[in-house]
Image 1: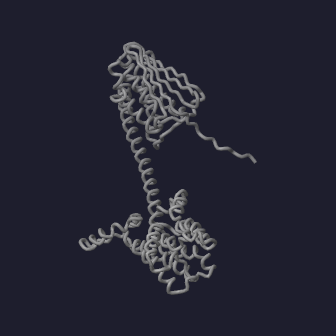
Image 2: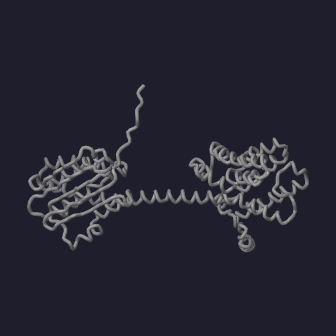
Image 3: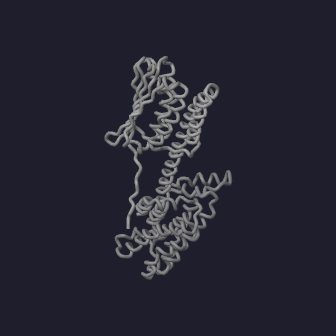
Amino acid sequence: MASSFAALLARWNTFRRVLFTEERDPDQKLKLMLFMTPPLLVGVLLRLLSPAYRFADLSLEGAFLMGLLGGRVVGPIGGAIVTIPALIGHEWLAMPAAATAGLLGGLIRQAIPDKEDLWNFGPFTFLNIPKAIMRMVRKGEIMWEMLPLATCVGLEVGRVALVIATKPKWLFAIDPHWNWMLILVVIATLVSVAAPLKIWNNTRIEMNLERHQQLLLRARMDALTSQINPHFLFNTLNTVTALIRVDPDTARGVVLKLSNILRRLLRKHETFVPLREELSFIDDYLDIEVARFGEDNLDIVKEIDEKTLETFIPSMLLQPIVENSLKHGLAPKLEGGRICLRTSNHGGRLHIEIEDNGVGISEEKMPHVYVEGIGLSNVRERLRVLYGADFNLDIESHEGKGTTIRIDVPQLVPVVPEVSVF
């Protein structure tokens, strides 16, 4: 029953956020109590309404658990709330006992220096008792998870003693007798507190792992982008330097184009941008390259499907490919060169094609293109990070005739919110 309640609560994102916040404000403490008290109330009601569900009453264990997680205020108040049905049923000691259990949980939470030690308490913590004793004797160190263990034993034994010393109807206990069954009941109390902690700790570890994976993904993307940008700027600045010497008027226009490029690079990092914006960036870059090669030596052809312009693609996706076409395909060529950029949309997927009539890639070099070419290797790695296996990057090249690079990715379009007109 305790494990079922814990697994059910762990499905709520709000509960997880509150649970895994170590320093909580009053609102968060209230949310924690509001999440945990309803299932414990249901358990008490089930026990009162039917003798077959006596095991569902987790008021003492739940109050202690709320104290461990929420502190000295949440524990006693939560314990008092969950025992209201028992108090109505004339179980006069139920509320004081649960409030005391919650207070003890809160005091233990306050006493433990590192709150992370609370998550070490598990169903098999009792196996570490010899180790805890040896550490205490030799080093004077305390294994703090032993404190909740000892308290759980004390709470159950104290409850049985209280039931035996007073009227049995004033407080509920599974088996209020001094016999071997008490051992099983104590173990059940331990597990009822430890199992939820372990379930929630596993959820906490998964959330931390997911957050670390997101941070790793962002770090990898930043690393790949930082490799692309300096490579691009180095070649562009060399072009500007050469133009300033021979043609100041053209150099002025190139500087304006370069300022647009730098403004884009200095903007806040964006993972995805509309294809229209990426093409505008490419236009500025190609204008600089046309100025370098000469209008007669470099021809730019664009066959763009208008329906693809608002599709989102990874930022700085096309520039390294176009740069490779110019540097490795067209630069070694004596006569004029041509770059053709095509986009289309088929079956909900965006197809991009960059074709040049350069020198091509030999069959011997083709297997090493993705590894040795910084631009293409980074593009491929970025696509793999962003799309997983749901992308294609193919190269078709014929030596002396040119190279065609084809990219196929899922079509991502902006969601336009609906506007109500009154």
